Length: 239
Image (tube, rainbow, N blue to C red; front, side, top):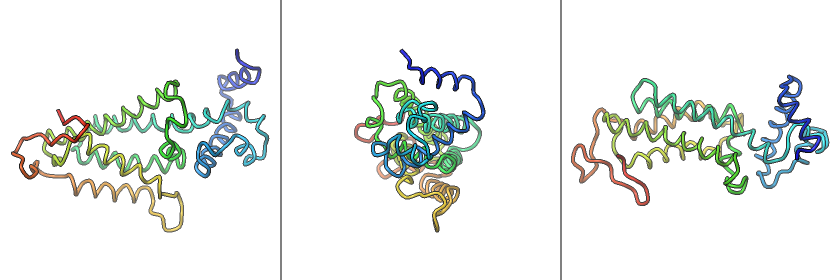
């Protein structure tokens, strides 16, 4: 059974008033900064309330829990990234160009949503929410959609010869995703001397382009033209 404050919060969300939405967005933005500074487990709603100059009880009119704050911070941004990756995969252009578009788009998203998405990356999902929860299931689906889009781009590059078959598509895709995601360890939006997200995206794009691009597929040592890339232990080879 919902409490009185839960019913008031649900009604305010459903009504969609501008002032309520603005205050809720402010709370979410403040929480994202505190999560970044203290980590999800180290932060509390009391920290959020103190930073906003209010009390914790007042927050419950806008948000139900610390977990709900975290969920709101990352889900919409992650969904938008998955949609964009799928659009890039399904759009026009060579596979190498698509990988470049995807890299720059992801870095742009990390800048736009800084530090929201970095909060999600740096936290172990199992420590944030029960893997059986609705949110955890949603995020698993969203993440898989993104992964599948990148893998699909790499596979299309194998097929048309624009990407050198240096390994299984899944390994290459995860390598690219991991390279961009690792920026959560060192990228600080607006810090003195820090390259912009766009500059980082361009640098990563050139690294990938230089390493993978080929006018025609170049077999690895011991391979014949047309051979599939070798499968990595524990990972399926490309179809």
